[in-house]
Length: 102
Picture 1: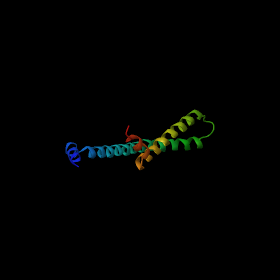
Picture 2: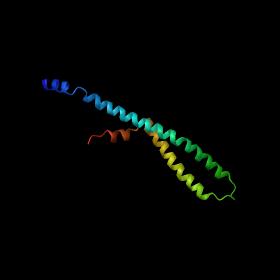
Picture 3: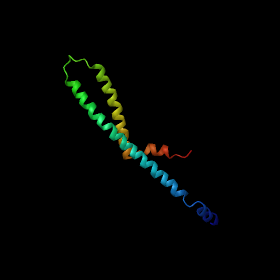
Picture 4: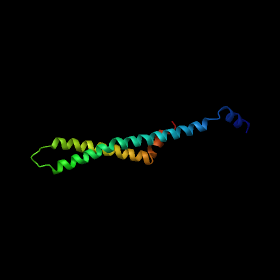
């Protein structure tokens, strides 16, 4: 009983700092998720409009290489957008690995 009181007196904020680090880490993940959503959403809209343009364009215009670039760019935008949604909603996997003790 006496040792515990001395330890609490010597290190009064250790538990609070650890909880504070966890809260800051979770908050930073959520802010990064918001960043991913905001940065990828306009690209998704642009890629969707380019896709509609390529689908309705006459076959006289050969835009195959542009369409391939558009598809690969859309895949990266969708994955970034979904990762942002995951981080904003829960991000449990990243929290588990980020706060894991070595």
